[in-house]
Length: 157
Image (cartoon, rainbow, N blue to C red; front, top):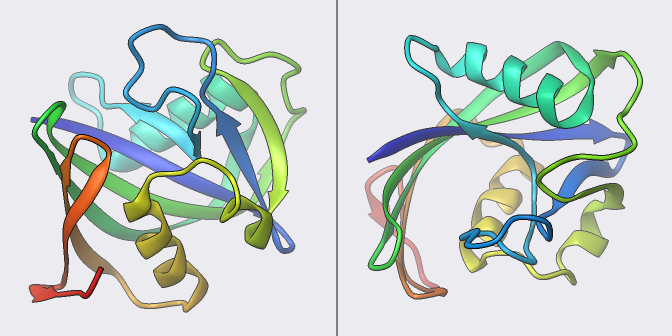
């Protein structure tokens, strides 16, 4: 099992996103995702969040919210606990290049028309609805979402 962070940095109705196109054998290849990555030894979710955002974007977060934990279960990639954040205040200059992919500001509605994981649509709706801290379990077979459970209750998918 792995622990990761994911952050949706907000600028009005836009999110700063990463189009994952640069790494081979990337489970997120060609998907649009928030900013984040894997924990390093001894890191808290906030430590990982701040480090990953700085490494991938050059930005220093100044205000963020811990929104939920998403448990991904995959027959191909194993289990992952993703700590989900949003942020709306930062300093610094956005880097022009990122090793993981291409950075872009996208309108939240435009994002839904891009290649994203099916389960991302579930937690993006939760973020937009300002739902308090949540626990979401997403089970995949390959790239197909087969189960979603929010705070212990099965969702229709």
